[in-house]
Length: 293
Image 1 (cartoon, one colour):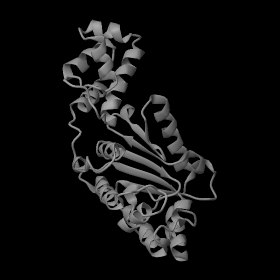
Image 2 (cartoon, one colour):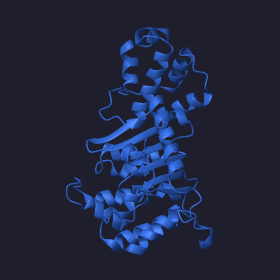
Image 3 (tube, helix red, strand yellow):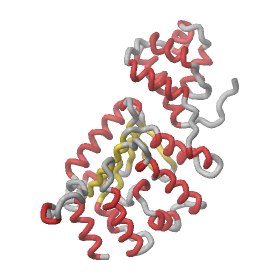
């Protein structure tokens, strides 16, 4: 079997996890490979995701490494056996590997936690708002039409059957960024309120008056699968996407998100009567900004 020329984040993560288990067990690659009758080079290629691994081999390695967490082992097997195909496959030649990785991670999670200090999160954007961002000079979007089509497809994860829970903390700054002008922003903010009606969507606004912690944390998405230890934090940087899956990073961003939700305004709740709303809640702040448009 030839070596992979393109490695998805799912494949890279599987190799990372197997290497992490081996190192936790205190075994060198050569020793581990010999113990299960595998070549050292082959094990190295598996750990660097350059080649695949058969399900029985995953079980052998997990047994060798003393991993007894059945849910975790089955999740590793599911990662190995996954075809990687989905709606995003149709965009394989038109969108970047980072975009495809993002779609696959979102499709396989049970929860999404997001923080965005400057933009309305992509999964919440209207087509006019997203188009205005893609058309903005200097942001590097060469195929704005294709990028828009892909983003709108991604949003279906929120309304699919058995969708993930989606919790977003949006900084107040994003409510004032007039991409496309006042009319486009108004429609976008009204769309946020409508999305908050969905039972799986929670939206909080982090106000200017709160601690500056949100501004310092930057934007991130934490995609949480059924086995949380296999979650991924996605950081969108000017040089491309960065994926964090090591335990310290996952713990750090989980605590960070808890801090953000604690200090943000209470979530948008359109079920309450107007008089029941606090003067300082997320809905009231959005309505205030709407009044100024």
